[in-house]
Structures are given as C-alpha cells and as structure tokens.
Image 1 (cartoon, helix red, strand yellow):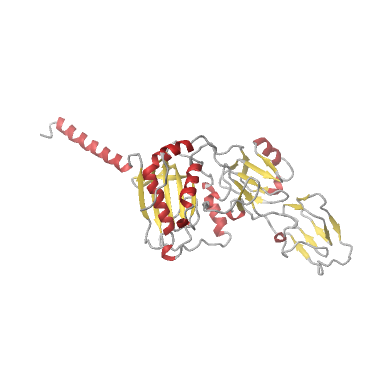
Image 2 (cartoon, rainbow, N blue to C red; image 1 turned 180 degrees about the vertical axis):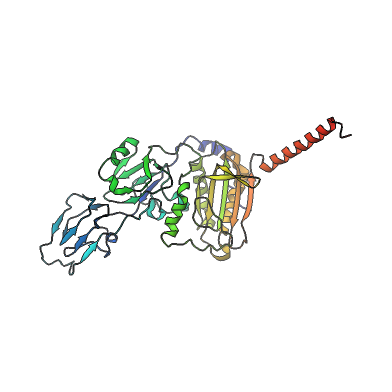
Length: 412
C-alpha cells in the first residue's frame, strides 16, 4: 500500500498564511565579450600578431575586460566597445611575444542567431546570480525561457546580443538586470532602451517590457510563452539539429509546454481559491521526493491553461489547472515506473486530503516501459463530474417528456 502524507486540515491551515510567490531568476548564458575564446573563429582570444576582424555590416556590443596588443583591427560600421577599468587596445611594436608565435586573422563570430526563446541559452540562478543548485525539480521547455513574472539577469561585466523575434508583440518581465543594475520599473527600463547600448544588444520584432510586478496569485501564474511554443521547440530541436531522447515507452506522454514526449506520469489538478502552489510544491519535495525510493525521480509543477473538451469537441476557451510532470532515470521496461508510483502516492493523498489542500480533483496519466498505452486514473474530491451532470439533464428531459405526453392525454 502506498504511504500517505501526514497532512491534516490543521497543519495545512497554519501553513496557508498569506505568502508571496517565490521569484524566479533566469540568467542569459552566452556573451559577446572580447575575452571569451568561443567568440572567435580560431577558438582563442586574439594575440599581438593577429589582425582582428569585425564584419562591417554586423551590429555588435563587445565588453573588453583587459588591455590587448594587436597588429591591426577592422571595426564594424555600427557597434560599441564597453571598456572596463584599465582595458585598452595598443598597436603591436614587433617585439617578441611568447604567447603569439604566428599571427593571422581573428574573426569575431556571428551572434545574430542567438534567440531569446532558445531554452538552452538560459539557466536558473539565485538572486545573487549564482547557479541554482540541482535537485528533484525541473521545468518544461516553455518555462526554461523567462516567463512573464520572472527576473532576467545579464551577467555583470558582459556584453550580449539577443534576437527577440516573437509571436507575441510584447514580452512581459518583472525585471531585467544589465551590467549589475536591476531595472524593475517601466520608467527605468524605458530609460535604458533610450540609451546607446540597448539597440546593439536587443534586436527583433518582440518588445521587452518591464512591469516590476510578480505573480499576484498564490495558486501560481501561467508562464505566458504558449504562443511562442513552436518557436521554442524549433530553437531547441529543428534549428540546432538536436533531437528528443528516444523514449523507452511505446506511447509517451506529451505534457503541455514540453517539446518532447516523456515516460512517467502526469497529473492534472483542479483547484480551489485555497490552493497555494509554492506550499504544495514544497510539501511534495519534503514529504515524497526526498524519500530514498524516489531517488532519480524529477518533478515539474506549474499552472497551465488547457483547452476544454465537451462531448469530444475542443472548446476555444482554456481552463487553468496545475500540471505535475513526473519522470525518472529508470531504463527499459522499468522506465517511468518510479514516477508512476510517486504519482499514485500523490493521487492517494489527494483522495484523502484534497479539500484541505485546496484541490478539488486530480487526473493521472501514465506511460512506462511496461505499458502499451497511457493509463488514466482520476480522483474527484468534492465536485460533481460532467458525466453526472449530463446524466441528470437527460433524466430530467425524459421525465419532462413523459409528463408532457401525459397531460396531452397521449399516455394513459
């Protein structure tokens, strides 16, 4: 029998005191720094005997952190050098340089293709900018790119160039930090956009807009990248030549916001105004994911909007729900089985304590290496299902028809 969590109505009440949603910080990884070896076609920083070549028609912003001696340098028509204290360029005087025996042309590589919506170019960090420690939590691909209430960090003492082409006219963010300065109001961001560096750093049809506000809903906020989902998957897969890992299950699950099919389990939760996403996530991590038997299981949990269906017809409206995605590191026929067991434990807890947690129902879907197709289970907590409603309606219509015929004298 799967163990249940020791959650009670009382301890959930005390845990449900008002709390703000935890801020998420995402840091842009690549840069256009002069001292970054990968920014040069030779894979090394130019030395004294080199001729540095920037394409004249390429727009570029380049941070220079130290002094450099060069033979010659060809500059672009539109660009800038951001010089740190002590940084400078001087001409090579022909003296011997032990680290530069043979010179040549060093070309600065093209940064135009780096897309805002490429999830491989972002990493989750702490507010200090340090890399967030790894753990049992992960994000679906759409949420690996900055979401509308996230804080974006471009590392101090770095230059960059990012393509903001988007399917949405405005890309909302809580804040953007550039060169160590956090811009967290619409006016401060507008001031930066009016400066000389912004047009060299950001290009594309998408407009970045800083709001200064975090997610106001304790049940969580949808990421807001759905319209750019195809662009995210194209950047992750199609444009790069990367491929999704081959799943070990025959009918992999396709979580909302994720580009690849997965083995494991998904749970869709309907919730009430009492639901607190951050507290529920913390409880799952502390009470379940920390158990030794779930080592190797990872979880993604977030609010999403899912298209509604009625009698098999997809509605234009989308309802908010909490999506839990569970995957594990098992292989072969065991793929997804640990995630399946964890999902069963979560569903059992929902059946027992769902009302206290602010969860009205949960629906589970499973795909493992030993199942031919997804298995579905659901646990309504305190609601009447759509099937029950339809049954009652048809019963009332049937009884109404009989009463009508009786009054007309056609039934005796």
